[in-house]
Amino acid sequence: MTEPSKYRITVQAVSQYLPDQSDELDRRYVFSYTVTITNTGEETAQLLSRHWVITDADAHVQEVKGLGVVGEQPTLRPGESFQYSSGSAIATPVGTMTGSYQMVASDGTRFDAEIPTFVLSVPRVLH
Image 1 (spheres, rainbow, N blue to C red):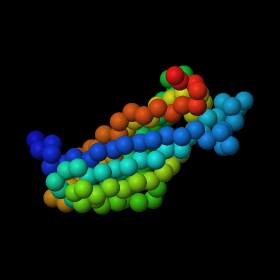
Image 2: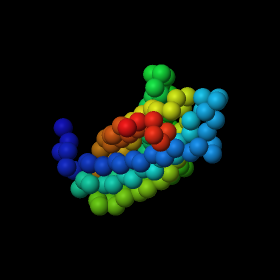
Image 3: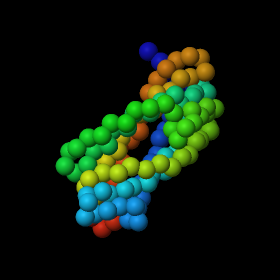
Image 4: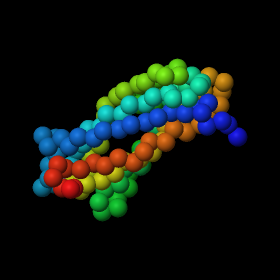
């Protein structure tokens, strides 16, 4: 078993509703999100791939898997961060995103970095 502190990636995400790209009559709600990935461990690590689980208020689930993020596979030394922005569309005014990044440390150890669940919400829909 690996030491948790040796391979640790902290992920923070902030979402924003994009009314100009959304079409509420057509049930298309578009959101941008900005993710900050920070290596809080002791080993340099590279992000290889991603796995997103996007769920709308009707419990419709979209899964997205692929290499890297926004065309990159960043390598982070301990203490370094990488930030990127992307987007997603769902059929309801509220939803969630969660998932994981698949990482490889400089010593060859592969591990997952959890993406904590965050909310996609049209302003004033949730209190």
